[in-house]
Length: 442
Image 1: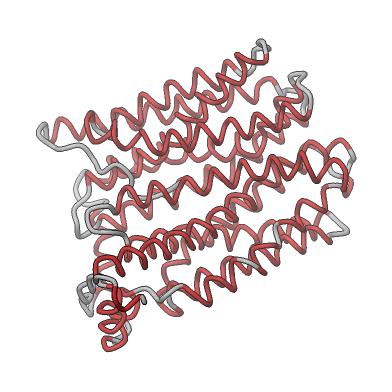
Image 2: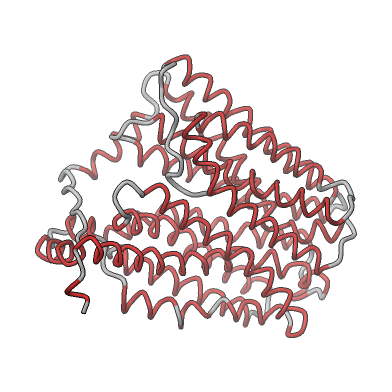
């Protein structure tokens, strides 16, 4: 029956299948990323594995350090084994690492599990973005990537409900056993139904297979890469520092550092900090749900605003509003008002960082765009490592109230540098169009 469909219809169905499978694995990526923060209040209350607040911050940083390594190495590994196998491998890795966390008898083993999970989480997201870009309907690539990123926040919402429904009655280990589910659901589905990336097939010289697949589903075959592309990677990196370009590059990197410090610091410590402010555990976990709902809305609207007003300007405004929202969370307000502030903060916080990548992409040339965005993300990952550690140190020293202030200051930090970067861009090219809406993820 499928043979009677028009080629465009077959191509559309194939794109939807690839996007749906990638959305599923990114959903589990978000669940695994946020589950530690959602389970942490219970773990600290029960002194699980002898856990103390300062140690909890270190453990949160282990996962983000693993993500740093995974993100930086994913491109090389993907070029070797292919997009499909990389998605399967990363999903299997963070699932098995969660099993190690669930079975851990010491903090050291638990920390090893979180580090290994970070490797898988860090490698999965850029690979999934590449895969959906290959099969996205024509002229809809940015929208598809934005849609894919909503899965990460949906995973954060799911993590809160896992903590509410499973951790309290069954204990924290049960939450990490839930994170093993992708191994038995997502990996088999990807293995059975997802095609290989066309760009990978072309790069490996498997042109016959690529043409057959493209013809079957009416998708375009990407152009073959220059044989000297590997050498060009270093040339593209060098271009980020030519002349006085190092100033612009450094501004982007510093803005990304502050942004990811904020994103991962808040993601790890929001439930614990809110409980420390006197809210019940159920309310604290519901804050995670509302925060990620805001993130989903933010991802869908930030790009449209950036297309109209410029990504650097929107990123700066978003970070200012994030700073206000995060600081207000240190004030004990009526519950309904607090939920509103959490939602709005999630809306601005998560997409502010994405707009940094959009700014970099719009500023860069086609020859070095991938390198510029990749290194901006990679340097920002050091902030992702520092954020959870900082929250743990403040809590351990009885300065939990300062956690909101510290994270608000990191938003101000990013505001300063993305604003300076935007002003420098305007002086150099007043007619420069707005950056692309969504090109990469945090």
